[in-house]
Image 1: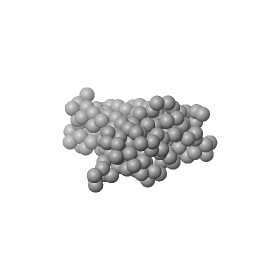
Image 2: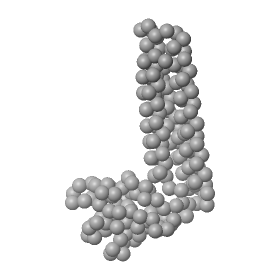
Image 3: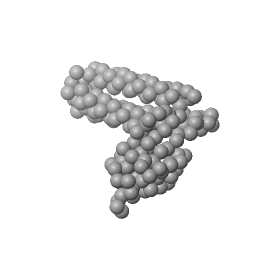
Image 4: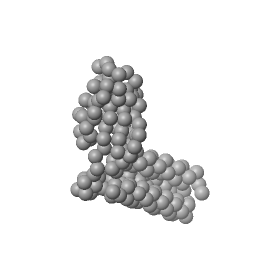
Length: 187
């Protein structure tokens, strides 16, 4: 395999891996009926006038599958943490007991489960678009290399390898989405 084809495959692999990583990260934020500290990852708290990620000022734990406990490192920040969670509009109702913020995660309704499933599938489609974009860039690179003197049989071989790579990553997206879908729909 020529250096150009190898470089195109490496770049495509890296881009496609990033798409899968991003998909998994986004899906970790979609709650599936179980409490998860990742549910609060996007929350920012007003910390002395600066909007700071919650994980930088507090510890989030899950003592049981239906409860999140947020323990701020500074007790006077509990009210700001509660306010930030309410303003995040996640459908969660934080309870401040003076020591920690306790969040009971409600059961999902069937309609909410379907909405979350649609969101998961939409995230999967975004990942597929990124994968197709990486494939397109790799194929363009190989075609340009062919114009610059790469033998035709090596170019065809490279294109076949790029397509195999694309198919493999698309199967990975399907696996991730079906696992999340199963997780969402499990009561």
